[in-house]
Amino acid sequence: MNNKLSRAIQVFAGLGLVDAIYLTIMKFSNNPQLCIQGVGDCWTVNSSKFSEIYGIPVAMLGALAYVAILVLTFVATRGGTGRSVGIFGTFGLGLIGVLFSAYLTYLELFVINAICPFCVVSAVIMTLIFVLSLVWLKEVI
Image (cartoon, rainbow, N blue to C red; front, top):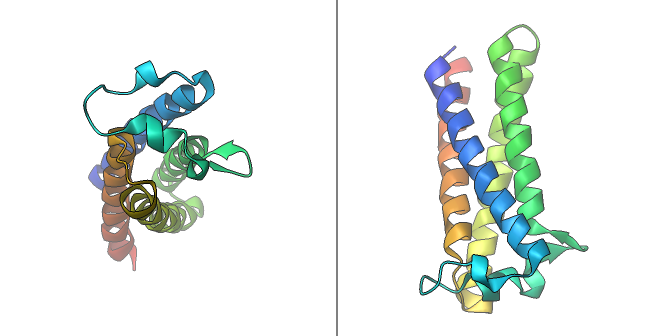
């Protein structure tokens, strides 16, 4: 098993978690000062109707996804029967995450007409997690 891949995924998931928690705090605090002034239009994105799904902030869903990825990578590195579950689960969440990030990026560019730099960071991180999880999965297949 490639420990470097699992560690890299864990590092990116940790960074994504910090980013998602920050966005969640921004959403709940309703404070536009938490946005980086002059870089993108984070506030427009974070206050749009697309920033929630059934009243749950998208950022909070992202935080949960990053936590799940962290848990799955730890399970995979333990070996045994959890190894396959962890690797396939990490790949599955990475795939779902990158597709959802692509959809959210589309909304930012073509519907909301505003870009949130924190959202872009999350999309890049999720893409990196997906690519690394694909390489990890190919190692075990």
